[in-house]
Length: 147
Image (cartoon, rainbow, N blue to C red; front, top):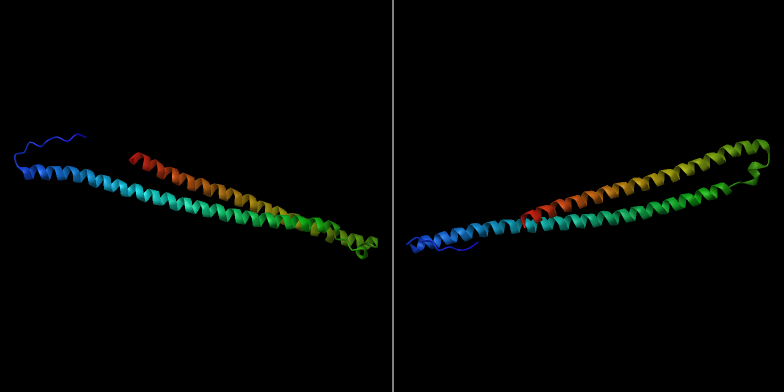
């Protein structure tokens, strides 16, 4: 923008016109600077929340994996949990078989439920991360449009 000399014969008029022109530009610059600064704060908050979500997910995922590991170990032990006294006759074997397989099936269901929780947790985490990144991208687009 080139400055042009005002043609008014009154110095005060020229001064006021210069101040108004500079003032309007200065006000716009100030407004947009504040907007960009606010947007950058918003991005920083979103990035902080994103890191918190990632950390929370990692902790919950690790806890669930440990639970799954323990449940698998418990299942393996269940296959070996046979008291010889409970299978020393045909009648006892029939009764024991029902309890034995019911116990194993319950442990298998527990493992399935834990694995499903882990899968759901992972999907929810991916969705959250995608949402945060989308918010950041939208704000960055606004900053780029301004700047």
